[in-house]
Image (cartoon, rainbow, N blue to C red):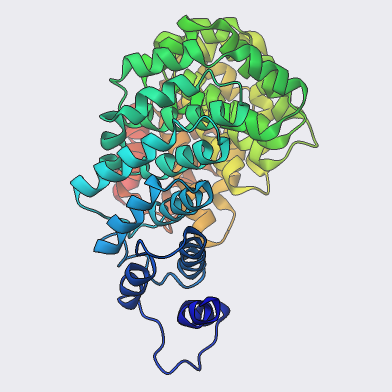
Length: 458
C-alpha cells in the first residue's frame, strides 16, 4: 500500500523535481482534483500531510495550483483538516493557507474568506502547540494584506484572541500578535479599542529585556506593530497616552547596534511625527540629537540615513518641528545639504525634500539659505543621471526650488545664485514630465520679479 501510495503521488513529486517526461504534465486545473482524491477521510493523516507538503512545494516553485485551489471544492476539504487531531497535519494546512494568501491570485468569495478566518482563529486557542498558534497568526497577517481580509478578521473572534496573545509569555507569539493588530489598525483606524488594548497589554518591559539581548526578530516585529498603529492620529495618541515607555524605547532603539532595528525605529518616528498633535510629546523625548547622529556617522548605511531623513522631513512639515531642528542642532541642515551629493538615490531625494519642508516656513528660510543649499540643488539638477534616478531626484529638487521661490527672500536668492535662473529656464529634459511643478516655480519667480515674465515667454 505504501508503494502504491508513492506511485500515486508521482505526478506531484515529479513536477516538484522538475521532471518533464510525464505523459500528462501537471496543470493548474488538475491539482484540485488530485488533492481532493488524496485528502479523503480514509487516508492516514501522515499521507495527507505528504500531499500538502508536495502541494506547497509545487505552488512555491511552479505557481501551479495557486489560482485553482482557493476557488475549488478541494479548498473546503483542506480547511476541514484543521479539525484533525493530528497537530502536524493542522500545521501543514496552516502553512499552505499562508502560502496561498501571500499570492495576488488569492481571491475567494466572502463566505469562504470568513470560514478561513474563523478556522484559523480556532487554531489560536491551541495552548499545547505554540508553532500552530504562531503559524496561525502569520496566516492571518497574510490575509490582512487585503481590505476584505482585514474586515473579515476585525469582525471575527480571532481578533479578540489575538489581543489576548499580546500578553503571552512567548515573545514570538506576542510579537506576531502585534504584527497582525498593527496591520489591521493601519486599515481600520476606527478600531480604537483594539489600539488601546494593544498598547496596554503589549508590555514594553518585556521588549526592553529583548533589546538588551539584541533579539532582532522580536524588536523588529514590535516596531512594525507600533509603526502601523502610529499611522493613524488615534493610534499615535494611544501610543503616547497609554505607555510612555513605548516612546522611550523607540528613541533608545535609534542607538541599536543592528542596522535594521535603527532603520525601523526611524520609521516609527516618521509615523509619529506625521501628526502635529503628537509633536510636543515626541519632541520631549529628545529624538532629534539621535536622528542627527545617524546622519553624521560615516559608517551609517544608506538605509538608515534615508529613514532618518524621512523622519526629519515629517518633523520639518510643522512650524514647531522646523524651529526645533534649528534649536537642537543648527548644523544639521548643513549635513543634509552635504547628503545632496550622496551616491544613494533615496538619500539625495530625501535631502531635497527636507530642504523643501524647512523652506515652507518663512521664519527659518534665511537659515536654510545660509547653508548654501541653493547652489547645491542647482548643481544637482545639472548632473546627468540614468532615467529612474533623474526622475525621482528631479521631482524633489524641483519641489525644493518651488518652495524656496514662494518667498521673496527665496526668489531673490535664486536670482542671485550663479546659473540658477539659466538652469531653470533652459533645462528642458524634465518639462514634459512635471509641467505643473515647472509652471508653479516660474509663477513664483515672476510674482517677485514681474519683468521675468517677458523673458519666460520668449
